[in-house]
Structures are given as structure tokens and as C-alpha cells.
Amino acid sequence: MRSAEATTLAAYARACIAEALGGPPAPRPAGPAYDAPGATFVTLRLGDRLIGCIGGLTPVEAVADDVHHHALAAAFQDPRNVKLNLADLDRVTVELSILGPVEPFPVGDESDACARLVPEVDGVVLRYRDHQATFLPQVWESLPDPEEFLARLKKKAGLPASFWDPELTLSRYHLEKVIDPAPIQAEVHPW
Image (cartoon, rainbow, N blue to C red; front, side):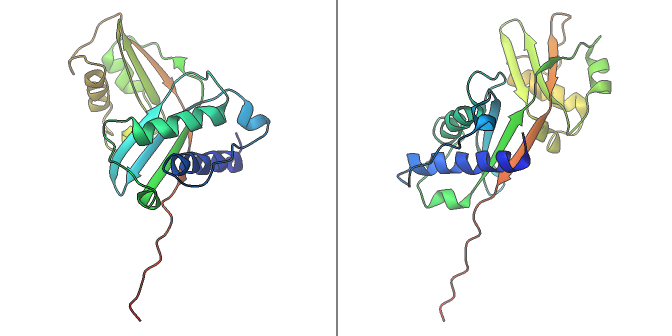
């Protein structure tokens, strides 16, 4: 996807949330790039605080529709969220991650995985029986050590941090990240 189209989708995510909060209608971007299947995550931050991150790993609908659904879910269904109103949205940074294909990442054991993962580049999906979790590549910013990264990913999947089993599988993906920053607020002076 071209960067202009990705930027349009990030702005569309913000517009979808604004519409749900009583703002103007959010016109859906039109064209082949927006109608192609795509998998996205929408991440919302209020300052440095994560207040929502919802997405999917598999493209099941047009990328513009995927952005619409995940923007609303990140804003209103993520348990980390704060109750937003339309005025609050001007302080929220909207980050859109457009995922590439999720590909198997066969490893011999955990130390092999730690040696081969690429921090700040690889998104990782961990699966073990009924347990599954993913971390976007952005998580490497706060967990730069591969051992700690995998330990936290296992905990997110509901497994012990030290768990490893030959049935555990890893997959990885890359993504394009676009940020629609919070609008700059003009400073109001009393003069």
C-alpha cells in the first residue's frame, strides 16, 4: 500500500471514532487499494498512555472496513480505554498498523527463537493448543530483550513465562505503521 493511502486510512480511523462520538460522518475511502482485503490493528494513545489496541491477523474484509471496525473496537471495547467524548479525541494519537502476511517461523527451541527474532521489525504470534497471543513490532520498544519479549508474550497467551513445549509454534509478520497524531492544540492567551 502506498503511504498516501495508508495515511488516508489512519485519518479515516480517527474520523470513524469522531462520527461514533457525534461528529460529522466519516466518508469511507473509495478505490481498489481500500477495497482490497487487509488486516489491521488500531492503537490509541492519550499522551504516553495506551488506551486501546484492537485488530486482526487475517484479512477477512476490505481494508477500509477492517480499519472502521477496529477503530471503533479500540475506542469503545478495549478494557484499557477511558470514556471518550468528541473533545477528548483531539488529544488522542491514532496509530494504524497494516499487517503483511503472517508466516510460520519454525524454531528448534526458545533460544533459537531469541537468536533469530528481529527486534523492532518482527511482529510475533505465539500459539499453543488453545492459547494464542500476538505482539506488534512496536512492543519491542518497551521489551527490547527477545527473552523478555517472549516471556511476556507467553503470559499474554495465558501460559507461564518460562513455558516451552515442542508443540508451541511461532509465526511472524511485518507491517506498515502510520500515525495520525493528535491535532496540535493552539495555545490560548488571555491578551
